[in-house]
Structure formats: C-alpha cells, structure tokens
Image 1 (cartoon, rainbow, N blue to C red):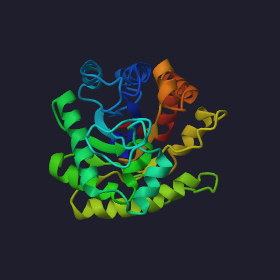
Image 2: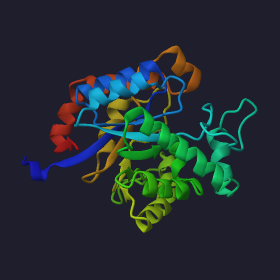
Image 3: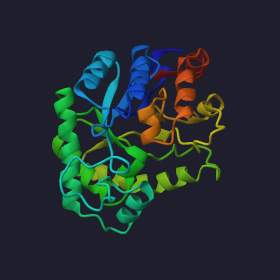
Image 4: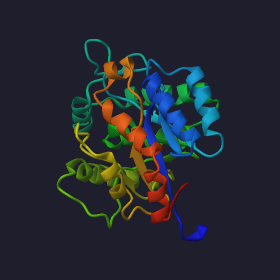
Length: 279
C-alpha cells in the first residue's frame, strides 16, 4: 500500500503526569513509536520539570505533546479563588462540574484564570505551547468551558488543535456506548465555536468504552479504527499501576491491559492490515 493510500491517525495517551508509573509507561510507548501523542496533566502532584524533560526527549520530533485540561476532582486548581470547589479545595467531581457547566453556573472569569494558569504551567515545563489541547474526562466539551478554552487557544496557542470527541459520521453507533452519543452532541457545538475562531479540530474521535473490569481491550481496539478518517484521534489510557494512581483514579488495572496490548505484536499487525500509520 502506498503512502498516499494510508490513513494517518493520532493515537493519544491521556493522563501523562497523573503518576510516575503512568508517565513511565506512556514514555516507553512513545519511545517505541507505538503511540504518537500524549496529553499532560500539569496540575497533577506527580508532574514535574524532570517528567516534562523525559517526555520531551522521548517524543523528539515524532510525537505530539498536548495539554490535558483538568477541572475535576480529586485535582486542585492552580489558580486562587476558583469556585465551586469541594471542602478540601479540590475541583468538584465530574458529574457536579458538568452539571454546573450545563446550567451555566460557572463564573467565566474563574475559568479564564484557571485555564490560563494551566497553559502557563505547560509553557514553563516545556518551553513552548502545546501541540494540541484536550480535557480530562472530556470536561472541555461542556458549555462555558468550551467557549473559554477556544478563546484561550486562539490567544495563547494559535497553532494548537483542539480535540473534539464526536465519532466518525459513518461509524456504527451502538446504544451500548451511551457516552458516545453524549460526546457527539456536545462536540457539535465545540466544533462550531472552534471554526468561528479559526481553531483547528480533529475530524473524528474514537476510544471510548465502559471501562468495566472485564473489558477485553484487544477485542475492542479494532472497532475504534472503523471508518476513522485521516487525521482522526483514538484516545487511550495505557499505564502501570502504582500507589499514586490508586489514590487518584479508579482506572487502574485496565491501564496495564492497554499498555500490554500496545506493546504486543498484534497491534502493529492490525495497523498494517488496515493501512493505518501513526501521524
């Protein structure tokens, strides 16, 4: 198959910086060229300048590094005065934060200040602006947040692209993936906002699943590639488990399952059979 006929996609590992073991696994996959993008949680307690330098070295010129905008618990704001927060000072959990956004109860000035701080933290760590921007738990596609974020990208990182989370238009869509329908709807508005302000977005998105303990990632992954166009994004969460990850996030053992899948021989064979190359 010629290079012209290939589809080039972004295979993006979310949550770099969440824990040392997660970051090390992501760097390993990037160095092996098994994935070609990762998004960084600049406010995670485990993220540091040394973690940024190690990622930069692994990514070299062949992988993209993005900002993983984080606005949900158990993480804490970088900015002063953000509201609402939990009693311990952390952001609200996803359901509560999403509810506030849908009801338009968030203060735009708080969002502007916090998003600016996370952009600045990325700039400080990497010495440049992010290649792209996405959101932890897809919080960036919700009302109020998406508007402020699009404006921030336009002003602070105009060459970055923004991850929209709608599936390919021609994809088979199952009621077994209700999250996919929610993201399709929310991303339609995100795309319109981004287009209005000249911010680029990916043409399609895949990678959501139930995260049930028994999920068979090796069987799920081929479906993520179905009808995915050139330039599409597949989200993934590879990692190794350590105490910090268990403290911060319920998604643990499945990260190791994803990591092992990307290390295995079936993964590159699948890409070759589908005519897919990592962008």
